[in-house]
Length: 141
Image (cartoon, rainbow, N blue to C red; front, top):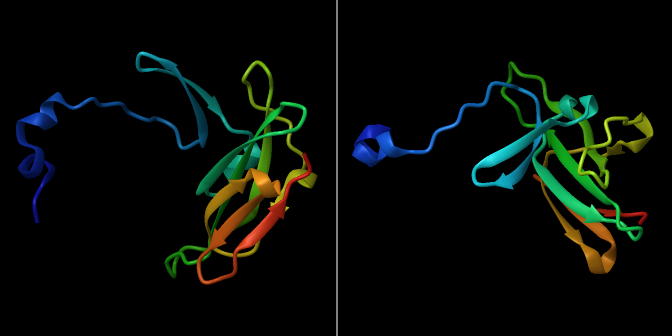
């Protein structure tokens, strides 16, 4: 098997490199010219793997992040990661995330979530799960 040095050679020494020093799930805001602002997602969003994100604009022009994720097919020695399924988080006008999440906000989805897509014409999100049916989540805008 080939190493990265074998494949990229001298170009590897010129590569742009950054280091992540947290295990938190975060929101990265691109402020331009390779400057990023980092904000940790709320505690509740740290409890499950985030595999898909949709950005929704409500009728009153508020934006929400919809986070999706469950992993059922883990290794034998690892328990499945089936925390919530989905979690909506409000983005305030100043761009900051709502850090006050209540358990009523969780959207329970059973299964191995892998993808999502927002369909504005249906005011819904379709969630794809491995070895299962598609799930439709009707949004209350």
